[in-house]
Amino acid sequence: EKPAETHAFEADVARLLHMMVHSVYSDKDIFLRELISNAADACEKLRYEAIENPALLAQDADSRITLSLDEAGQKIVIEDNGIGMSREEMIEALGTIARSGTRAFLERIQANKAGEGAQLIGQFGVGFYSCFMVADRVDVVSRRAGSSEAWQWSSDGKGSYSIAAADPASAPSRGTRITLHLMEDAKSYASRWTIERLVKEQSGHVPVPIRVREKPEAEPAQITDGSALWTKSKAEVTNEEYQGFYQSLSGEYDEPALTVHFRAEGRHEYTALAFIPGSQPFDMFDPDRKGRMKLYVKRVFITDDAELLPRYLRFVRGLIDTADLPLNVSREMIQESPILSAIRKGVTSRILTAIEKLAETDTEAFLKLWSNFGSVLKEGIYEDFEKRDQLLALSRFRTTTSGEAYRSLADYVKDAKEGQEAIYYLAGGSLEQLAASPQLEGFRARGIEVLLLADQIDSFWVMNAPQFEGKSFKSVSQGAADLAQFAKVGAEVAASGTSSPALQDLLTFAKERLADQVSDVRSSERLTESAVCLIAAEGSYDRQLEKILQGAGR
Ligand code: ADP
Ligand code: MG
Image 1 (tube, rainbow, N blue to C red):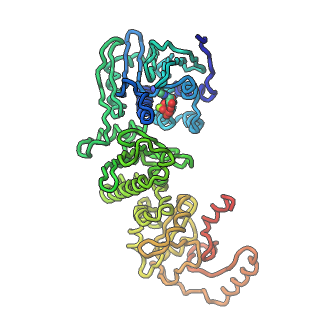
Image 2: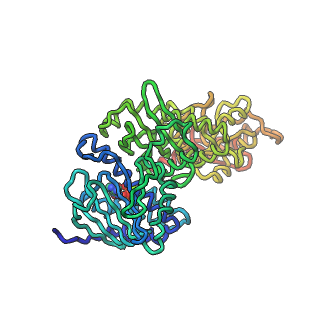
Image 3: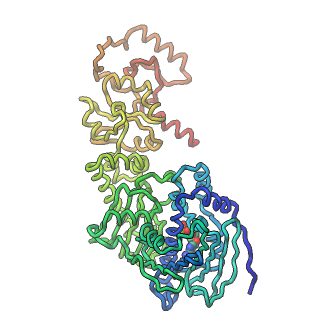
């Protein structure tokens, strides 16, 4: 028997542990949810590996999670009969946090926004470490499915852990047993009442049944049945159940803004359950952020990093369960599967339709959704040709006439001036900067509405969206704005001075002096207050896009 070895946590982890215990204090409850979700993941991984290798299930095919309480001993034990961990896997999984998100997590916690802690833990998957919020010593005994060895990992969460061979006779025959030695102020977690309440509240929809043993030797009682919510029909599921499921799936604590649940029959058979979160995940613009839809085949979890939805729906959480794929579907097959691309299309359409419906039935909820995710949805205008018109119609804008409200393109077109062929916009900069631009003066004077496009993404789609309801998009900073044909509102129309000889002289003079800097100098209808403004030549890049491209090294 080898003596126990002592290993140091990676530096970041030690810091992380300290901060978790000291700043994320308010939501200690979540440790249980994190450990249960790991146990359930381990059971799902086992079922998946057992497709290739059924011997792994041995005599024990039913997944389960058992919580054993010991009030007198101030302990709680979480045991699963899932895939388990080898010695190397323990070191890798419990001794390092190699996630790219760790640094961002630390920075966020240090910025110390109250109430954010628990949400962050879920988002960054530092779940296991949350047990050190309630325990001053944690023992993990695990046996990898099919292995004759078992290993014990132990730590006080203060900077190091030890790992040693465990007695195979007393170790689980398969899976992982985690013993938490509870801190004095956390000993209430060994009470049945507390644990039952937490399990129902946080983990009621975990797809593996959960049992609780009130005392170390007592018979376990089943608390949740591990049934898959999505297999029920919509009519059988309550709002609370959907919300609970969303929360356990996403690790978020908010209410979903939209729930889309349907079963498709016909050419392809699948069930989809998708949620649009009620708030914006802060890593939404992280270029590495993956989609968040899980793929199941006949209720067996397959993967959560297949791109099951287009990128512009990357904020959607949920799952797709289909019987049309083989259980042993490989990663390569998933990426190329025509079945999945048909399913992707189907689910995308249903989600967009549901958003449309929300826009019609509950403006306030829709606008909240739009303010959270509109800037991502707009990526679809140039990425998804088929959905372009639908996405344009969903889009909402601030305009020169909207004030604090939002306008749709349909609103814009309906109120356009007689004879107005274009949808005018001004892109780039903040809303305030845009609204103050001299480029708008001539449009304001004539009561012509101009879209104020303040999102980075706007400059891209607007060049790729040739038309909406027969009108093309035209930047006010681009080319000569055809304003002369529209009468100014209210003001007396001043005699147009564009042909006076004095003005001609001025233009010639300016053209000569600025010959190297500008391609033309013209008189214009666009200004009413300011003397001059810079515009891009007709057919060239919009000025804002020009700036972005310069920034990108083009
Ligand atoms: P995440 O669950 O997001 O991967 P965690 O910190 O919760 O992050 O867990 C880290 C890793 O530890 C898991 O990915 C898994 O490999 C391993 N692990 C934790 N608990 C168990 C368990 N009960 N059975 C098997 N592996 C586990
Ligand atoms: Mg986890």
